[in-house]
Image (cartoon, rainbow, N blue to C red):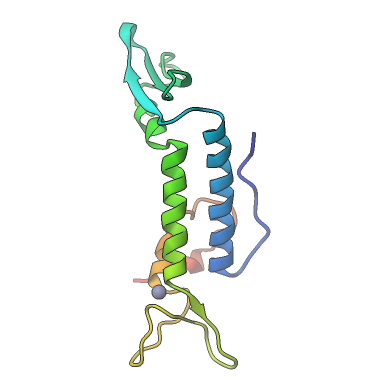
Amino acid sequence: MTALTTPEPVDDLLLWLRERIAARRALAEDAKGRCTGEWTFRDTAGGRHKVVDDLGYTISDTDDVDTNPWWTGPHIAANDPRAVLDLCDAHSLLLDLHPQVTAAGMLDWCGECSDQEKSVSYPCPTTRAVGVAYRRDPGYREEWAPRD
Ligand SMILES: [Zn+2]
């Protein structure tokens, strides 16, 4: 089993995000490789609640209400590895769409958010917004939070 890795301290939001997205992707790929197809929440006979894959193999059995309350099943199913990989793709695309531009002697700026009339420093609001999705991961810095 692949664990969510602890990143090396990084002071660059973009580098940190790329590492965190890669770590999430690795976990999702590992889980995807161990099951078949879509995860589905099922309210089965006898009050059992399960999350199963396309072949009916149990991903999570929420029958034990003391340790696995019924309400976790829909959440687990919504975090199907393929859905997590889609989120990783979306986050990577957003970062690609907002490239960091660097020039000697100048502050870094966003190549998408900036134009000839204004320069938006990096990380731009979009990059900071992507960071919100990973702010519970180790190494996140409050200075990267979206600004008002
Ligand atoms: Zn931007």
